[in-house]
Amino acid sequence: MPTTARLIAAIVLALLAYLVSDQVIADMPEETDPGYFFHVNVVLGLLTGWIYMGQRVGNGLVPALNNGLTGMAVMVLWALFVQGAWEMFDRAMRNRYGGPFDALLAIFTLSIEFFFQIATPAVLVPLVIGGCVAGLLAEYAHKRWS
Image 1 (tube, helix red, strand yellow):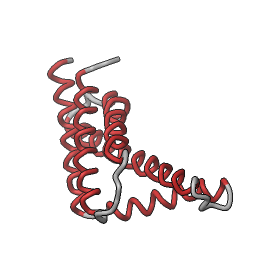
Image 2 (tube, helix red, strand yellow):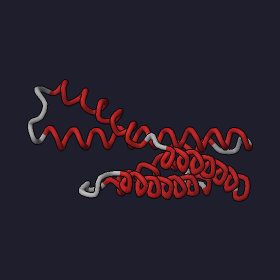
Image 3 (cartoon, helix red, strand yellow):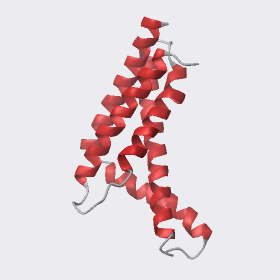
Image 4 (cartoon, one colour):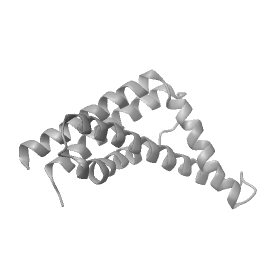
């Protein structure tokens, strides 16, 4: 059921995904082609905010903060998995793997490599602050318009 809290959570997480993606691209070498990096992460932010965070509002301030932080973590985990799978498919098209199990294992190893690339204060601090803000704004929207 569409609610204002779902909409606010989706918009704030999508904005957070865009801002953090911009920071991640800024930390990468200049020759890196972002491709659909921004688009995929923003869509994942929208979906996580709408599906995950939007249905867990209405319980108070501390649960709102927990909801925002958990929603941010879910968004990051999905983004790491999807970006790892995308990179694996790109490498698989160039015959870099010996078989399908090597390719499936590569998704997780690439995701872990991507995590260590983004595990910097310049990326993690905005994620934590943005997750808290998303949870608080979704809770406020629920109390205001429900």
